[in-house]
Each structure stands twice: as C-alpha cells, then as structure tokens.
Image 1 (cartoon, rainbow, N blue to C red):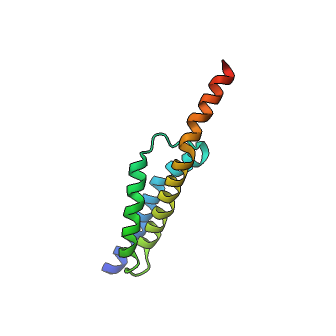
Image 2: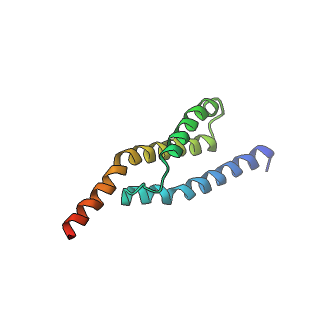
Image 3: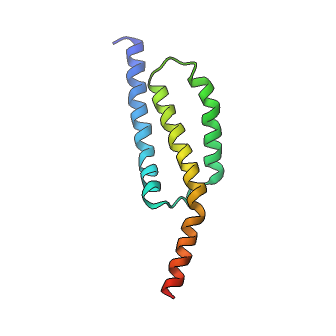
Length: 102
C-alpha cells in the first residue's frame, strides 16, 4: 500500500469514528429536544469555525475530509438551530406540566 493509500484509509477510518462519536448527541437532541446541556456560545463558535474551515476544505481534493467537514457543518448547524428553537420550549413544557400536576 502506498503512502497515499495509507493516508486515504486513515482519513476514511477517522471520518467514520468522529462522525460515529457525534451521532448519539445528534440523535438524543432529535428525540428529546432537550439541549439545555449544550452551551449556546460553543455552538455559535463551532458554526463560525466551520464556516472559516470551509475556505480551507474547498481547496483540498475531494476525499474523507470533505465528508467529515460536511457532517460537522450539518450537525453543528442543526444543533444550533434546535438549541435556539427548543431552549425555551423545554422549560416552558416543564412549567406547564408542573402546573397541571398541582
């Protein structure tokens, strides 16, 4: 196997591992709509970082880094949108349930 082949294999494996490590977080956010444990500042910063990193990635040949970066762009973008959308909703729902039980 050549050096380029080893690099491509390593990139593919690391892309699968990194994406797999983030999937449970995204799936939990989809199911529960509870993003209270996520820092809004961190999600904003991650999205800004992804936007800047796009400049770098688009100048690279298509490969595993494109897949990994695409996954990060989509997942952090969705997490930010859900955080903004559901942050108030979860506390409002808890208050409504508390009043109903009282």
